[in-house]
Image (cartoon, rainbow, N blue to C red; front, side, top):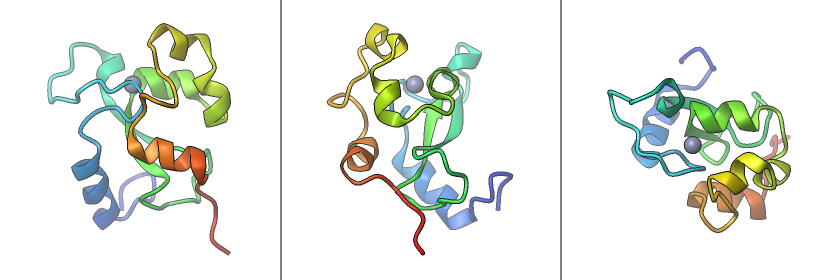
Length: 107
Ligand SMILES: [Zn+2]
């Protein structure tokens, strides 16, 4: 497990899926041009207990710090997203799925 309690199999699966920021689409590489372009772990629904492939993803630090604890739909309406042309139509499939069917804790 890594420090976010993400098991290794899930971490591997997310790294395989998310080669770009799930929100703004910036391509991750090993030598990011700036701190904001670095990848970071994201909980699409802001609940660290929801540790599933549907809720754990990689986004850049710029998007992560802008989103913070906002609800996904609220954040997609923010000036940050407008400025970067991030919308429901431009985000990665995992985010589109989360908008249709928000990840939740399984009882
Ligand atoms: Zn981003």
